[in-house]
Length: 600
Ligand code: ADP
Ligand code: MG
Image 1 (cartoon, rainbow, N blue to C red):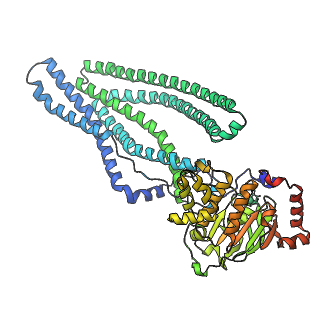
Image 2 (image 1 turned 90 degrees about the horizontal axis):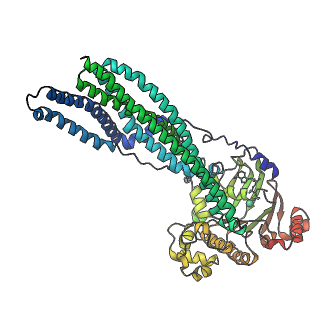
Image 3 (image 1 turned 60 degrees about the vertical axis):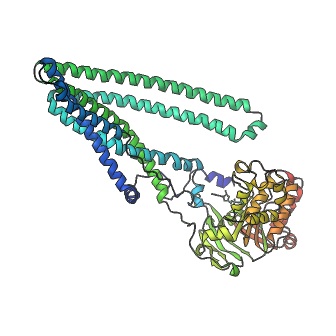
């Protein structure tokens, strides 16, 4: 065990989903094409339209000012008639602009593909990471895609369009602007990136504080049992204080940034007015054109500021998109379904392991099973015993086809498991009961029905009776509608295990795997659960994995395994007489007789 723990450090899993991946444009296009090309086209047209409107507005404003100026000089004609057309035009454009501000809606896609991955995939991934991909990455990608279309396209067009009109209005002013703006933008970008860094630190700190709270709340029983509430609270308080400081710092930074950018902005306006004004005075520019210039240059500045924010967003969006696509394209090695079924009337339930070798995909150098052979005759109970870490659970996982053997094969009624439909195998042939039953936070009824979708209430009751669970369930005020709490927190260990048994029995499995099903229980619940298991075992092919040898005495065969190999086979008496490893294990367990009651 120490050896494999030492090997645990670097995950040497060489499947494609390890490491940063690049954004896959081709795939992105494929996903896009069938659904949304039309929507996308409309969005692009709208964005371009908005940009053109925004380029038009300054010019119209300039013309209006020119008319105003004309009327302040010499009061001939009707101001209203002359300006009416222009004003209406402007009003319409403003209306169009408001309506387009809403921007095109995003295209909603959820991330499929997570639950059907191989078990090996889950060995190498943290659940938190997966959940984050399901939520934040999809969100992030979606919003940046939307931004690029609605804002990016528009801002680019606006910058280009306004620059053209600016240079037509006044080349000299435009040149000045072209020098000043990038300088200011550079300073702004630097400050912005410092702020972003600060904001990231702030978020991380909040996440740390949340993590502390999460851990303390999640393990509230342990915290209470050690009377550590105060210490946990202090820990949380300290983290919170830290994030408050960070948030304040960020707030000050943002205030400074906004103040400075306001000043810069106003200085630009003032500068333009000053220089432009002297041009007007020297008759080199018309007043209206100066007005157009001012408004257009502000449009340019706003668009460029938009673009710089957008750039950061796009970088993040692309990497989020790359991560999302990675999961969408990853196809599991062991499919969820597809393959032959054996009709129920021909199904005997004979299992054989033929010289199976196996190492876990995330730890390829370490061979867990070496040339392992085992036969489970139909309708018989075979017990698998051996030291902890010897590979017993691994045998069960291969039988469930959570993994495929690296060499050799596992057969059911002589057929290679790889040719059979995995969902049929798991859903209808094999019932699996493990040491740590996992229940879902819903009603007892639904938890049992999880074993067979669409089972009738009668079937649920029957399975519960068979699992010795009906009595305690009906003793609850809500009966079968009792909610079991998150992970079954409101039930005792023995009750949870009996629900898990009912859940496995409802599908009437031909093969039953019991992986240390009673070893976490106290002796009283063990007796009730064992009774249910004994009843469930009759007439089925059963693989009993047991650490505690008292539970395997009744098995037809006992297989002793050590270091991934079978080293003894026989009945209890035969093996005792032989005086090998089994006899040694029995002798050792007899020495610590009080031990069985102790939680391991
Ligand atoms: P047992 O059930 O007999 O206690 P297991 O089959 O659980 O033993 O484990 C056998 C060996 O395989 C152990 O060395 C264990 O560290 C390793 N192992 C178990 N599960 C995994 C896994 N998901 N990934 C990598 N190694 C594993
Ligand atoms: Mg085990």
